[in-house]
Length: 139
Image (cartoon, rainbow, N blue to C red; front, side):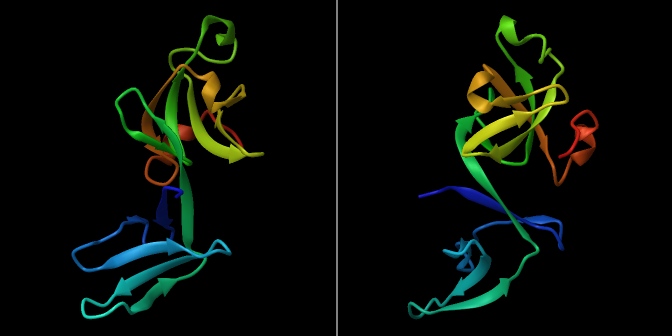
């Protein structure tokens, strides 16, 4: 099962599963987001919200140096082997993207497969801390 998180562009907040109130975000087979509220009395569910204002970020399957899960849209500091120092230094900031079947780190100077970076440290995300992306163009 794919792990994901959902950003509500209108309300500017993350949509989270709420087990106490039986509210769950789901992705339909055609890629749309629906927020469902399940009944506490039977197996029925009601669509309480849906639309194109939701942005889906998929989990990369990796964790950063602090153990936090890395998702698309995360802004990261990158640390890399010596041979990549022409592209990365200790202060290199990039954003996690998904392109051509691969998670990548897009920096000012390079587009690297996420597996090419030895260490990643999440410093924010493109929704809540987009000002960190000054150096990364076309994000």
